[in-house]
Image (tube, rainbow, N blue to C red; front, side, top):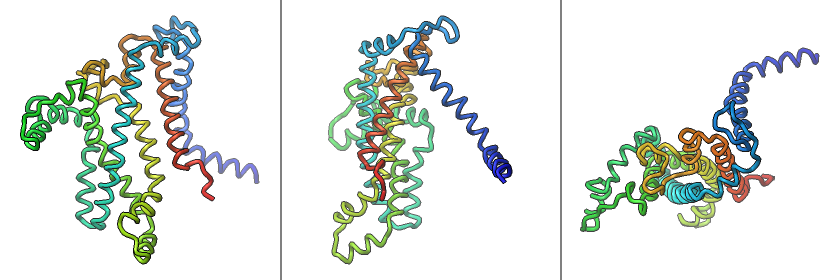
Length: 301
């Protein structure tokens, strides 16, 4: 009987063995290797590997460029999440109020389309839109304000973070709306019907019914947003002219770009691995704090 049960279980595991092997080889093995390399001085992988303890970490935090990259990453992350999640929630409410008809489907598809386009394409499109001279966004502002506006949203270090935020906002808003919309439509309608009977207004229903039932959705968007924001690279790399300098004037260099710089330009793999470990720990801390604040770890009972 036990032998038969073991054979059945082995059959089940055989279906996922390839996936498990792939994850072990392509995810966990490189991650463990990166942890090891962060304690070594490595100029060439497999050769000239010298154990240096925590020297790489000390050097990392003594570099003003790394601290600036860390600051840039956190600022861009905060602005992006602080705009995309609230506006996505409000727009999802408006779309949800249209009913589940063709009009709602039109807006769902329309808002989600930018998310389908590749990050490089989105960046190149918005580089044209955000140009200092004759850029569509500056022309729009000039028409609204009645005076000529020629702000270099991606070429002026004083405004580049806002320009970069517009790129992430435009490409990520549709995804945020769809996630919010799916969660909104999962809230039992009986709650709103009971609130109507009690004479609750739209704002009261929003505060006491909608928002509490959206908590898990907000946590999901926050955690995934932190993970994506901390690893931001492609669009900022293109804005900087396909360099990791974070142009203009290093205002857009993120931790990921700093790690890439030490990996493929300076070939200092120990420093790059130490940077990767710092990035992992910061992301993990943010994710755990976000989940804890939302009550994710509490017993549902």
